[in-house]
Length: 116
Image 1 (spheres, rainbow, N blue to C red):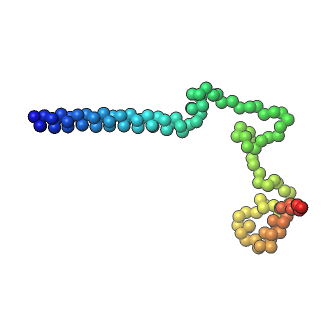
Image 2 (image 1 turned 90 degrees about the vertical axis):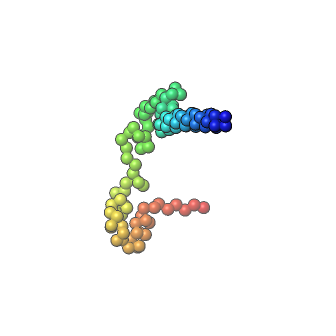
């Protein structure tokens, strides 16, 4: 009689563990689906009813370099016509400069304004 009770208990525990394992596998599969959805926010917005829309550029507005749909390049500090601009030198040339040359170039680059 004790063996029958122990055997029933063992079978119940095994079946419970198998159902728990199946539930864990289901949750892992759902998590994988959710991770894929969260990797692309456009899918979430689309399911919420949002649609992508790009505003047209007004005719009297200058080109915006931060818009990805325009072919513009960002320039560092503007372009100067003289030969003292930092963009005229290679890395090696800058490293070979003396401190006096570097300070002279910095003084020519920066427009200093006095504030009171």
